[in-house]
Image 1: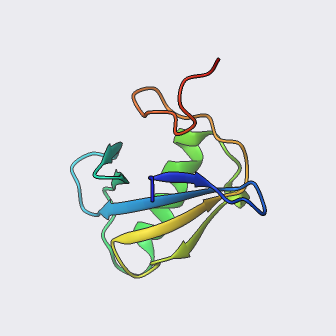
Image 2: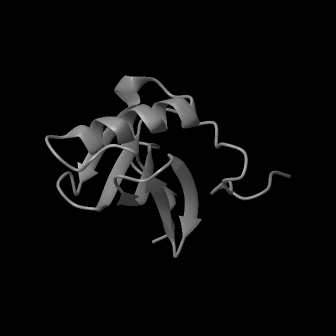
Length: 100
């Protein structure tokens, strides 16, 4: 699976993530077919998941209600649903490829 795919039924984006908690800085990059997300938050008491949602809302410019963790809430590998049209940040490859 690519790091981002469209759900054929709903049209939502499904992201495949690998989380690195307790990083020195927050960052997004594509590595090995997954979106690598580095977070400052520790992986305790849901803090990393909350930080992940805040980061995706900010960087993808989508409403908070549009971001949900579909799988892997307690692990480093996660599947996240984006139920809005994101604005892909500069430096992150657009999963739809170049436009016409």
